[in-house]
Length: 182
View 1 (cartoon, rainbow, N blue to C red):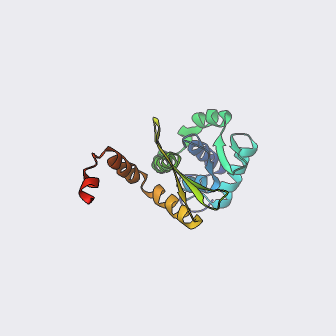
View 2: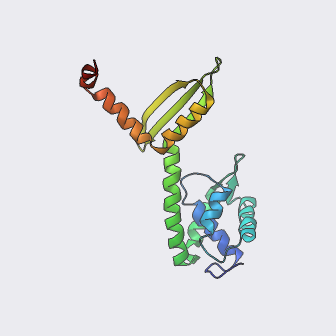
View 3: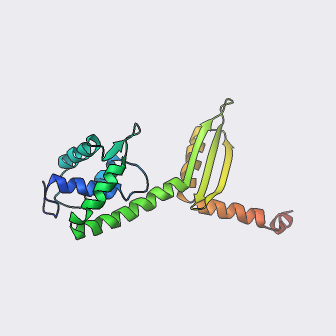
């Protein structure tokens, strides 16, 4: 164990990892579980790593080929039994961090941008925006260079709502702007 905190042994670290895994909205990578678990100053990296590996070995968590951890039914059962043994202040701090993490995960799943190379050397950039009800917008654009495709992907991820609003405004306009330009 490292510094001063409320988590005192490896069993409590395991409880905390299960508490986190039971509350994230999708499987997460090692770094995310590490960041969320380090909400208590007494937890050390090596103790955390060992506990995480034990939870996978005992089938409380699964580790996918992509390196994502997810809780199993066994893990959910044990987490619900043991979560009250975690100190309240640790759970509160963890819940705040989980809320932020889940918001980012939800946003990542709702805003997607990717590109594929065509046979002629150009690229198709795919943009997708969805909400809790389903797809809001799917858009495919052709660009001539890979660096342009990457730039468009990045810009879309930063403010997809702005692009959606501008497209809707343009499509819903009565065409007055076009007449004044002529």
